[in-house]
Length: 259
Image 1 (cartoon, rainbow, N blue to C red):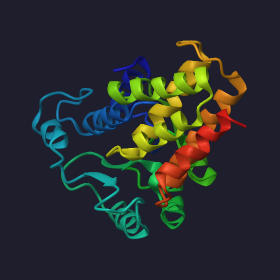
Image 2: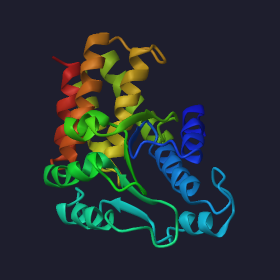
Image 3: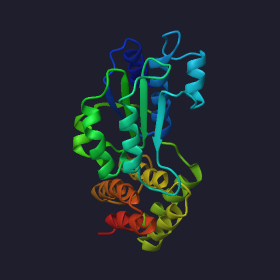
Image 4: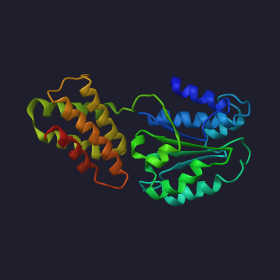
């Protein structure tokens, strides 16, 4: 766990944690780990930063009645207004058995506009025994009104990598760099669109493009074009949330390397 994450847990242990925090960073796994760690710290029976007490065990198994995970369900791409209305109502109740109710929204960038608006007042004036934890790898995708009501905390960690996919992306970029063959870029888009977790694959593309800018592998492509393509992957992740065509989005992002 990163130093920032450990400091966050210690702040929670002392009872000084802000009522609404926005944890962001490159690793979805690290964000989830710290959110569960906060929930344990706020409700640990031994008042530690999380141990093996029965409360911490139940939180780990997602069986604690005061810890709520709000996530994208089924085939949906967004967290619905109804899901948010449910937690807004639950936030007005006292904890069932713990010291603190915790609502973990993962990923927060999947909040619909209606869901975000429904959450605003509760984020601004929550009950004293309630904590909201919003997780995202891309805080810029959240409404400014949501961000302004939260304390933003960067949580370190590496992007989860699919080595085979990363190698395929690098190979395609190298081919385009050496031969200016746009079919190589179309091939990258096709491979990414075929992944089960498309948003993670697009995020990995962005990381590879940033690695190229940093000179971690040689490409004869202008840095400005690499950066423009990396920026376009962030926009692509946003549009994936509204069921846009993944392949087309990646092709548009990679087109920045050509223009």
